[in-house]
Image (tube, rainbow, N blue to C red; front, side, top):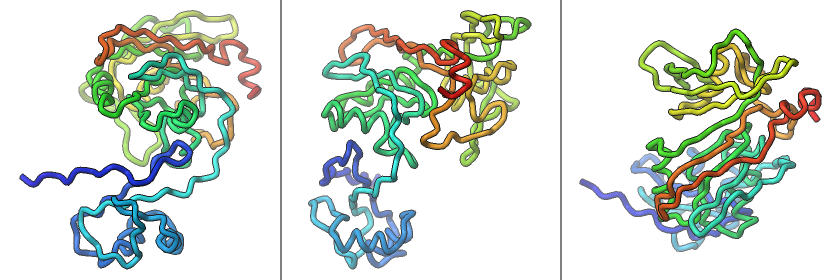
Length: 316
C-alpha cells in the first residue's frame, strides 16, 4: 500500500485571520509546468496567476518562490494567499460565551459565516476570532449556517480538534434551537418528525423524499401570541442539511425570514441585514472529551421577531 506523503506545514503565515491556499499537484503527466496546472485548475484570470508568479507570491514548502517555468512534479505542494473579495462588514458583535485552553464557545450573530467560503472569507467568525483573540491555530469543531445565529464551538489546539469533531459526528452533543414561526392551533405539539431528506449538489434547497428516515427532529411549542406567532424549541437528533427548516415547512409553519422555504426568494445578498432568519442555536451540551468536564452553554440572544415583530418586519 502506497503511503500518502505527509502534508508539510504552511510556509506562509495567516493574513487577516485567513489561511493561505494550499494546492497539491495531482498524479498526472498532463502538464509540463506548475504554471500550466494552476492556469487550468484555478478559477482566476491567467494574467493574475502569472502576476503572482512574477511577484513571488506562489511558494513551495521551503517558503521560496516557485518559478513560473518550474517543472510539474506530482505530489508537490504550493501555497499562496488568495486575493480577498471586497466584503461588507457584518455589523454585529461576536460574543465570547466561554474560553479556556482547549475551546472557545461563541454566540454568533445572524449573517456571519462560520468559516471562509465563497464570498465570505475575512468577514467570518473564524477569521474574526483568530484576529481578535490572537489564536492562529483556532479551528471549528462544527459549523452553523450563515443565516442562523447562536452557539458555535471552536478548538484551540489542532491536535485536539478531532476529539471535539467526533462528538458532533457521533451525536454526543445535545443541541437545542429556538425559532419563531406562525402559530397553528390545529397543529398537535410536541411531536417528533421523521423523514428522509436529500440535498443535491448545486441545488439551494433540500427536500423530503420517500424512503428510510435519515432526519429526526423534536418540535415543541414554547409560547404563542395573539398576533399569530409562535416560539418553538427544536431539537435535532440528526444533522441533515436544512433539517429543521425543512421539517417546520412540512408542518405548515415555516420559519420567519427563511429565503429558501417554502419558496426560494434568496440567497440573501451580502450586506442585506434586514429580517434575519428566525432560528437560533440556543444551547450546546456535552462532556468535554479532553477534560471530562460536563458543559452546558446557552445563548442569551432574543429572536428579533419575537421581541418586536413590527421592527423585524420593517427591517430595523
